[in-house]
Length: 445
Image 1 (cartoon, rainbow, N blue to C red):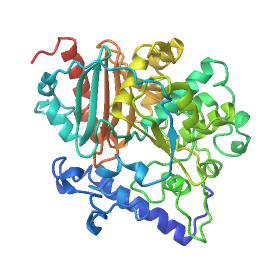
Image 2 (tube, rainbow, N blue to C red; image 1 turned 135 degrees about the vertical axis):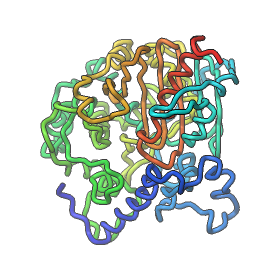
Image 3 (cartoon, rainbow, N blue to C red; image 1 turned 90 degrees about the vertical axis):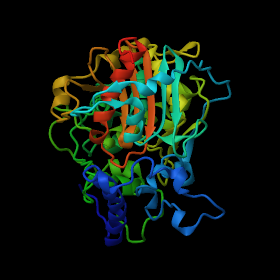
Image 4 (cartoon, rainbow, N blue to C red; image 1 turned 180 degrees about the horizontal axis):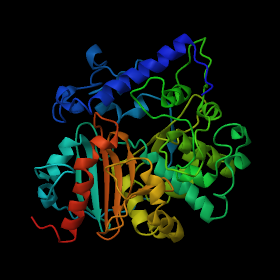
């Protein structure tokens, strides 16, 4: 990748990489890190006081926000750490959520993937460092729990669940004829003509089959994901920094690796490129578009917000923050074929296309051994299981799981010390299926 980084720029990049490397190391050495109870950010008192004690201060500019266990406070407080842009809920009343709580859910048991001992649902929440979780059944709120510093009125980083919102917006515009998925990206954004994205189609961005050189190996300080992070970092750059200074500038540097359309490659940069396409087509930023087309129609309880780079570009690949109940509302809207709060927010055809999924053979090439038979479509993960469940996924345990047969939506925020879902799926995916069976009366206690 033709990105020139000064010595100080490399040190800046490596500093953030080091913080994440410490986080990632926990996947291999969980015993060396405090468990969910011992790392509870409320108990540890991060950022409490006027001012907080020096040893309890968390900052963005020194990378401390990215360390564990500080991370558990950060994900519920990004707006205090970095610049953001609002995603307005509008001025209408929130759509009601009828509460029909079922405390017995805590006792539902399941067998973790690869496990030998059953686990209860309540135990799984601690195992996954859950910050908050909501379950809707037939639109009713049947379960709600919060841990640490996240509260019902709080907002939490959705991480790569953001991608699903962006992909859904693209699918909506395509159905309306405002966006042609078969056209080349360069047709919409000529500035990307010389990059890897220029020759890819919009559909290949939406399904992550664009062949770009972009490593997301967080443990490698030289991986492109860190150059991307440095470009999007809103802090002033060192005087001799020569790399990209915005997401847009970074995207123009991405080079091709392989042939477009041949395999699924999960790459955050694809979503940022798609966000640029959407902005160019609509004249709206991703944050404005999300507000106008979805968020203000849901009857959300809270505004959402997105982190931005130094020129105010929303981070389409992972910058969305929101309230947990509102994430569940979005999932319920999708479960109901795009209809919610008395209106058709998404065309039924958009949801049907998502549920059909993408090419399983393309997905299989990515080597997700814990996700056999899955596919990826419009930036949704499609299980193709017996219930046709599909979901949005984000690092550190963010999830939105929709089971059409069980009429169930699960929305979860978490702050697991390991970023990758491979550390989280064994005690999450079978748990979701067990809850679905329980709600259908097929998994009695």
